[in-house]
Image 1 (cartoon, rainbow, N blue to C red):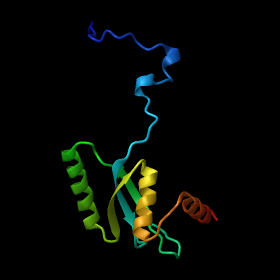
Image 2 (tube, one colour; image 1 turned 180 degrees about the vertical axis):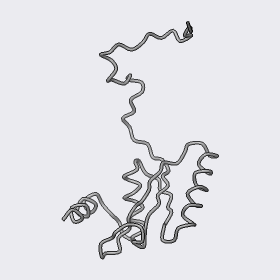
Image 3 (cartoon, rainbow, N blue to C red; image 1 turned 60 degrees about the horizontal axis):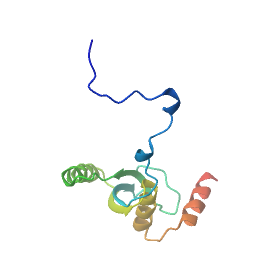
Length: 124
């Protein structure tokens, strides 16, 4: 019979749905995100405003070597496919990075209200 060297007790069933307080992080920290967007409408359907569609948002690795490998991999994929734009954005979340990339690639400044209006127009 295998013997466990871990001496911590097993969690109780009533504690299984709660994370320990030291693991919960409620603050948002800025990080680098890699964003790939379709600027030509070739890969995603676009409305007649020549809108930029964000295809992928990926958080950059903390390690410099991993981040460089990530960047090289994304660059290689974007170079093979025409019409894709690659942007590195510093943001607090993936959604924030997508919003900033869309604003950067479309040439305008987007606010949260602009995003909500844009999403409401898409549904109609």
